[in-house]
Length: 128
Image (cartoon, rainbow, N blue to C red; front, side, top):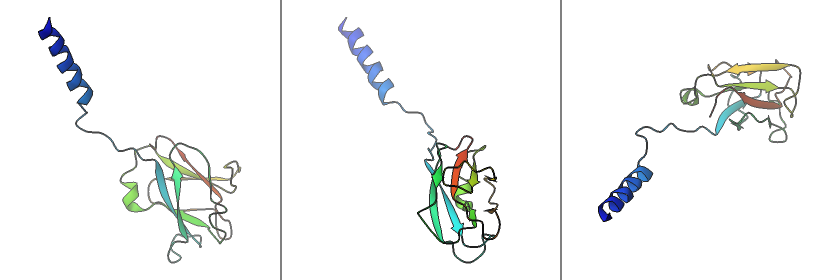
């Protein structure tokens, strides 16, 4: 009886402490670099914001008040994101504008055009 109890405790302890050999990293935010011009090549970025991967809207104002016409996901970040993850850009802080720009995670610059700032962003798909 004692042998059975000890064996059961040993099996339970090993099961609790055992971990999968490979654990996937959880991405909680995606850094999105903003630029003052419409082409993501107008000098250094204005700022970087961190979009939550849970699909909630991230309003960019009042983080910055300058001209923020374009944005880009850095190439090093692209490699760590899961397939099927993308970002949508909005012209309002509530992510409800009718004009939406999808930014697939391919390193493409996202912009509404000159003089049309990006005010909101959210992740779409499986990003975490």
